Image (tube, rainbow, N blue to C red; front, side, top):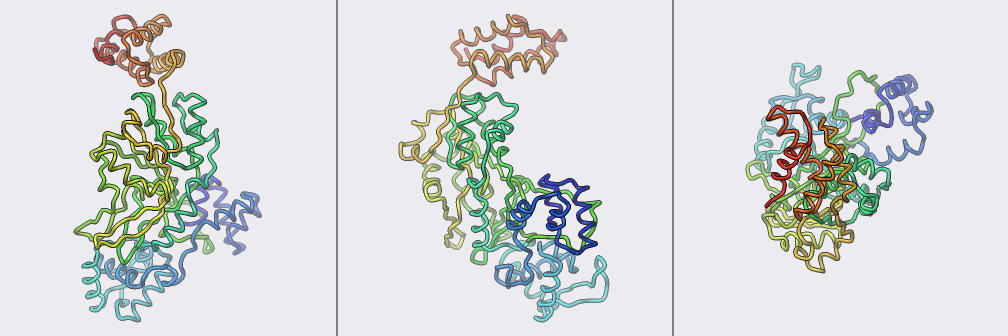
Amino acid sequence: MRFSDLLVALELLSRHDVNDALEMQSRSGRPLGDVLVEMGLLNASTVANLQEGLPAPPDSIAQLGIDMRIVLDMLVKYLSNTGQGSTASIAEVLAISRRLATVLIETARAQGVVELKPGIVAGELRVDLTPRGRSMAVEAFANNAYIGPLPVSLDEYSRRVLRQKISSELVTAQAVAAAMDPLVVEESLLAKVGIAANAGRSILLYGAPGNGKTSIAERMVKAFGAMVLVPHCFEVSGQIVKVFDPSVHRRLGAESSRGTVSSLFADEFDPRWVPCRRPFVSAGGELSLDMLDLKFEETARFYEAPLHVKAMNGVLLIDDFGRQLARPEALLNRWVVPMDRRIDFLKLHTGQSFQIPFDQLLVFSTNLSPRDLMDPAFLRRLPYKIHVQGPSTADFAVLLRAKAEDLGIDYPEAAIVSTIQSIMEHGTPLAYYQASEIPQQIADLCQFVGRPLVADDASISFALGNLLVE
């Protein structure tokens, strides 16, 4: 990915401004960052901070930081799978620059692994395996069947995680308020959520069901605006662990940059890293202990990273805590060391363990009593315990009225008062979800029987009868 495309993806510049800068760069031959500063599009500090945080594209196989055999294995597996390749296709699949792809092809040729054949593939000479290369491919597939971007080293991944820690980003009160929109959240609760998110420390959200604990947790990640770099995969002891997951990671600049001005001087960074927003991962009642371990694909013989590794540098929500397949005590014990020491230990199928940073905003959400779920020792490890309470009668009335207006329901003030009184007389606490569900059920009833959208005694009684348990 080019630096210019990243600027557009981060919404720092428009595509038009970037194209103008690339045009000027193509004429002058100067670095794009200098051109942007000269044109007044960005200040020097912003450009320096962005470029300093981006890993440079490796110019040699040694600069990849992984064993050369892994690189050659990936090359021969790709060529064996496709039958032929080119410099461009090899660069794209292995996530390296064309310059490095050329170096790799020449290195493989010198070792008798590949050869250049007559014929054109995408405008370039065809790259084929030699008999020795085909033999290497068989051995490589026996080790693992992964074909894709080359891994980064575990050390490099760990350094990157620490460099972009979630606690290193300043979260403002305005950012938290914007993230929670359109939820109705009291200012005191907003402040607690904001302070906890800013600290990047573990959080417990507890309280009666239906008052927005999950919704608040899901929106926390929106308060963070920084970019993080996620590797496609990393390597440890010759094993490959896949990290980047399109279902979890929001890739920046995913769309192709059609219409941009081509430039020989376009700044790039190591394409093994994917620029993303901070990730959000949620696990509820389906969470089991084995989901927190490396998942070894028996057939393909490589690993899928566990949930908390995919959530690295982002937010991990353990929703409906206490209702998981695993016992609460077992899950809590699994988190003790990571929460205390900010490191975790993962184990390969060979029995070898390795250390990895533990950096995410860990959020537990429950409608059960925290004292029934956790002992004092673990409660101590959750520095932010936030009680999410139900609405006041005034807030409930505002929400009920707003939802009714959205649905086009005539909901008189007297009917609103009557609705609130009926719920309280029933002995059921007011909850935010009720203020949305009651008008919706009234609308469902009116549409079914073909009557005007009006909240009267009959329609309100119908909605409450469905919501309140006798």
